[in-house]
Length: 173
Image (tube, rainbow, N blue to C red):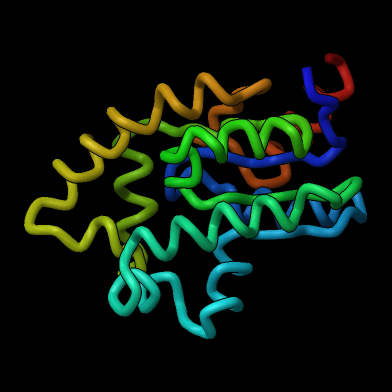
């Protein structure tokens, strides 16, 4: 079995709070934060939506995997990932190698409410976003659950409360 790093890796569906909680964890711990979506956007010089529109999802996923590989040498970091990062089995192995994998989850209705506030979600630009959300969750939820060391429901918690819960659970493992 491969040795695991000491990063805290946040996975979960869009709207679960990965980016916000990642910033909070970085503030609380003083650890550097790396966001795979930000890394991919910087590589292309485009927003995630623009990458999907211009280069397609496959190019985005390739860059996402490359980003995870680049992070493999990082010690003591907070790493936030995009909601679809585990669609590639290789990425599940890569996130596990980075460190403790934390699945942030929330109820379907809460997720829909949170992600509806932003129009920058390329995979939800469909005729029926709610049905798309339901289908994406059906596919992705088992992937998150299989990869996670820890699960935290963010539905009723503040970002600070989620971060404290994560740190407490890591400490008590």
